Amino acid sequence: MLAMTDHSRLPQFPAISPALEQGVRLIGASPAPMFIVRADGGMIAANVAYTALLNGAPAAIAGAWMPPAALPPGASGLAARILDGSLAQASTEVELATRVQLALSPVCEPDGAIVGVLGVAAAAPQQGDQAARELGRLIELSPVGVVRYTLDGDILDCNDAFLSMLGLGRNDLRAGLSWRALTPPQWREVDDAGLARLREDGVMPLIEKEFLHRDGRCIPVLVGAGNLLADRRQGFAVVVDISATRAAERALAESEARFRAITNAMPQMVWSTLPDGFHDYYNDQWYAFTGVPYGSTDGEGWNGMFHPDDQEVAWARWSHSLVTGEPYEIEYRLRHRDGGYRWVLGRALPVRDAHGGIQRWMGTCTDIHEHKLTEDALREADQRKDEFLAMLGHELRNPLAPIRSAAALLPLAKADPARVEHIGRVIARQSTHMTGLIDDLLDVSRVTRGLIALVQEDVAARLLVDEAVEQARPLVEARAHALAIVDHADGACVHGDRKRLVQVIANLLANAAKYTPPGGSIVVTLVQVDKMVEIAVGDNGIGMAPDLVDSVFELFRQGQRTPDRAQGGLGIGLALVKKLVHLHGGWVRASSAGEGLGSEVMVALPACEPA
Image 1: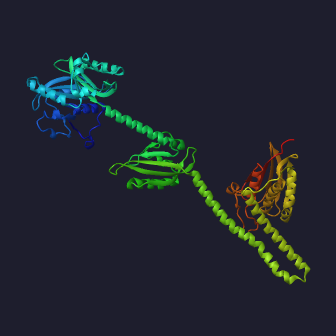
Image 2: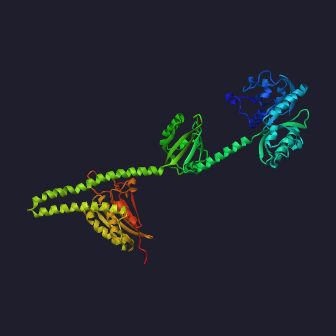
Image 3: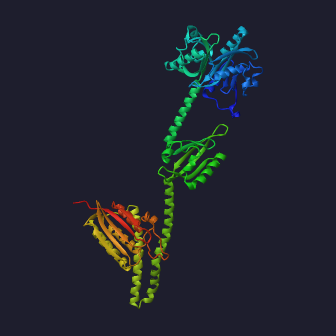
């Protein structure tokens, strides 16, 4: 029914307003000859009934822009006066293919702004009954409702399309229909305003309202009306059922609400983009993770959320997917709300139409930071394990060499008791060293597997320190260290396994002695703080780097070792200390001012309960 401009091919024309758009829909559905003129005088649209009145076939202007010259002579001036507000409406006879009566009225926005002129052509009076019959036939065949009304609200006549729209029949029309009776109460104010415009101006701008169906439903409609020029107490209205449009809008809104509910219930961050990659949606998890204001990462703003080292590769991967349509998948670091960066897995797939064209991209970001840290920790642990096995082989071979040499010399020294005694001491010393290494390994294994049984008793903290000092004294004296005990515990006692706790403190003393250059200083401090007894072993030795302080209690972890491995050991002593202390309900902590500045290891154990 409509010959209308294709705005996509005419970018120089501005987009039409909502009021004009409604007018276009109205005239497209109307059987009466109609057209709409924009505020600049250009004709936006004309229906087929109007083009038939022009000199030429309807197809000649269908879909083409109709310049102002297409307005009949004498109508342009009237249209201009209506547009500038100096004329409320106008009517004139013009000569087209036949002589017609042309009625012009304003098209207004809800705020009253005039944005165009509606033209309605009717047969001139001299055309007589034939033209009236033809117009009536067009009205009856129209798929939209056409109503003849009075300004009192009575419906004098209507076509079957209007009756069917409301579930009514001709008998209902003969019994009498009223505009007001068909209008739900909540729309009466809109109705009254429209009738007031008809009384004042003769034209009611397009309005949206509802009519009552026979079954009680409310039918949403679009209505436009104008009074007859010959009898301004009557007029015609065109009524378009927009139920399908409103149902589609509701379905779309419900679909969007379900989509948002689903995406907001997901633990991942969900996002979507237009086909060109413009980000236009993020779920709540995105904003909870990033802490950015809503909408601040739309468009290309998301790329600024990546770690600077990841931006280039992430953008290149995303650009490749946009060009090829291939799925997008990449791991990168995303800025967290705390200001740091966390590893996430980004994925996106294209949503395609029936023809394979990409309509949209849907993507997710999954927080994998803990997984990445675990992977790194496992790789590091595996590396430390390999280093430990190599070190274990070296440590076990070291004492075997002198034992093997001593065994070879023993038959040759039978006649020399002094040499036999010396060889025996070498074998005993190296065997003891090997036994210590193996015992440490077995201890760690038993503690790790939960096979160790603690023999708990109340024991004085100072007694534990004294026994540990006796065990470590040979090594301390061999390296000429000065050892001091500072006791502020005031006779405090702890509840635990005496043998294992002595082992813990002796291990700390042995570490301090080994990693302090000869002639160093070692201090053991005891103090009770609340319900814990703290025992600290400090030295002025080689110290620890900051990264080693945080991991010194991990299994197989050691600091830098000299090429000759002068300090020895397997790197399991402090790991065993930590596990034994934790079995007693305590904690252990290491500290150091840096390499070459000494270190301190503190053990805290639960104090005995008062008697």
